[in-house]
Length: 129
Image (cartoon, rainbow, N blue to C red; front, side, top):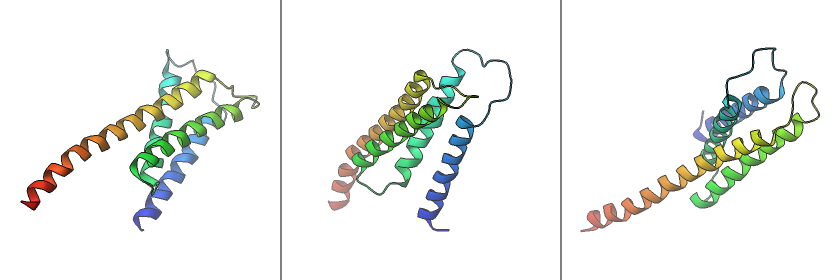
């Protein structure tokens, strides 16, 4: 399996899991403690942002922004679809948690790239000498 096909398959599978977890009926279980639901949204959409970033063939800055916006858009879409479903409910704070997760991952990816940009020229200069 080529790298691009592998990445695309992994992203597709992850999206199926995200939609499955967020749109299927929830079994009658005791309420999760505290902000567990928000943490799940943060992690789900942060992971989605990373996978989208990994799959895009754009410049790094454009890729990071597109990944954050794409994951945030999916978080919004999930909440819009959950609204009319009788066994689910839309929650603006779930959307906020999801977009915050995507934004934090995007920020980390951007910082990692910035750090690598500052070390690459030094390595190149040493190699040229």
